[in-house]
Image (cartoon, rainbow, N blue to C red):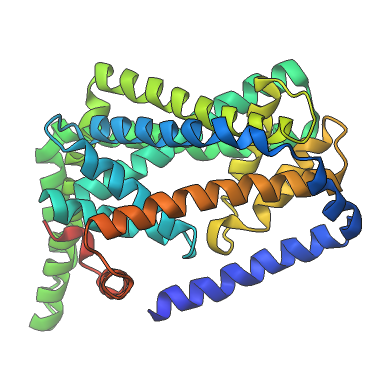
Length: 352
């Protein structure tokens, strides 16, 4: 678990830096008093809305995996387990375990499952980017959010274009094989020892096996119907997340619209791309506060709202995650052992 431990230490340090920055800009006593503004009755509709967003994620995941016969309960429980582990482990380690657990449970290629998780993140990023652009156009909050939107757009649009290019190379299998043979010849000069030649050949074969498996797993991008469904589900997922955030914000006596909440949601989600501790604590609050400032919300109240929002989402996903862990007869020791094995294994995603 050395890799996870190192990531945890780095993530906690980054979270601590953001917490110190926020603490120096607010009045702690005023923040504590701000919690008293919350009306707990808003929690009642929050719970089903948040759970619906995960049900939609399960439907989208089945589309991205391009297998209609997958058990919905397995999809949903795997998502709950992965997201709950993200709340307690750094660097979204839960996504790695989710891919491992689901591929083992449903006897699928690990590469295919992990590729579908990457596609999820790309669709999420593109959806949030479009929502942020839409909100900026109507709210015009300033240069900072244009910079955030520009950075996110470059990251996720370029990622999506790259994946689409890879899909098109699927039809060029002969060209990829010719390239592999050419690189193999270059790496096996006559003067090289036999062991080095064998190593180079095995290494190249492994690399091309990973590339080919990855490209094969992008089937859903080759169908406009599946692509359209994935986009539609992504929009509904984040509208549910926006509705969740809207209820949390308005529970403090504010009168936000869904569009305003989507701006806060987009900025907050992109702020958690900053590597930090579990659940993105620190950057999450920072993103929330600067987004609410656009609407004249004081940092103290913004911090209180962000803490309640994150606390509710963490509690709900941990309850669902621990229930799924219990239902699937898993234990924490087994999960840690599997994570250690997969983190240390360079051939993890080549194991078909």
